[in-house]
Image (cartoon, rainbow, N blue to C red; front, side, top):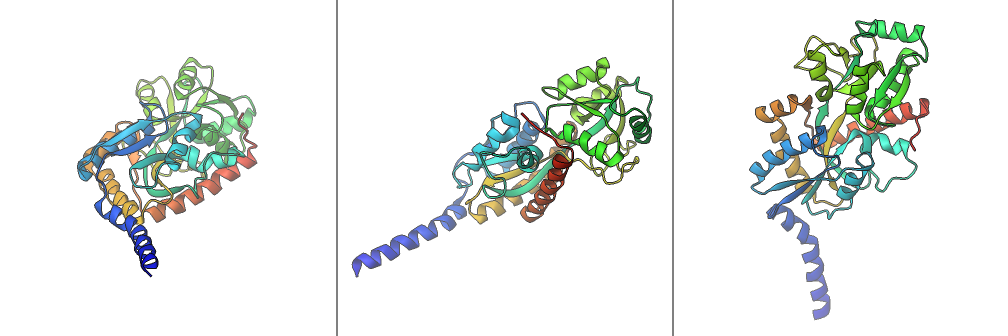
Length: 322
């Protein structure tokens, strides 16, 4: 009887451990994995969140840059971390919603191995062209593309990247046949655009905005579903003549599956507060990033729709990665 009672107490203690842990959380520093190198949009977003979250939680939030494999190395580390609420990971559109359609095998399952906490931000992209290209708006680009099939080139940061698939989606929706030219990053693609070696790029705002203001390239439209507040006169591509075109290069916060729901809810509340702070929003906007907080359920639904959307683009455009 004593042994039976002892086992029952032990089982009760184990069941109660998670609620007690969640109630006392956090009692130490948090690790925030950013799956790309320092300096880019993912890193900037991670650091804005980390700084403000540390203030609200009363614990350090340390950004850990773990780049490689298009973000999959860092996301995999986050998925395999202990589910105790002390390791978060910034998941982006690529390793979460696009790569499942590009790769037959991935080291993690974005749905089974990760819990969405909140959508965090959109790293805004803009369609830009070399000034020598005889087009002043999106409709003129579509007309030129149809008149010159396989003669217009668009650069990207690499095969399967968001800016690559933006071009494929543009081709599909407009009937144009622009030719993809991949680079090892957005910066070298931008340099070749300014040199005239490619004619078109679906660039990040942070990479393009200085060149746009300097007159070295011409902006035709924002890739997302709304205008950018710092360039309010520039229409979206959908507004400018391609209905249904929307490419949002989003970032979101995830926890490993098994993390107590109380911690998920607490982190959602705190990060949403951070992303609604005026100075945090301004810091992001200065880098061409727009805060877009959400509930966990809203984010999960968005991921489902994005995964389905890009699976169709990858299949219809026959996109392959090596």
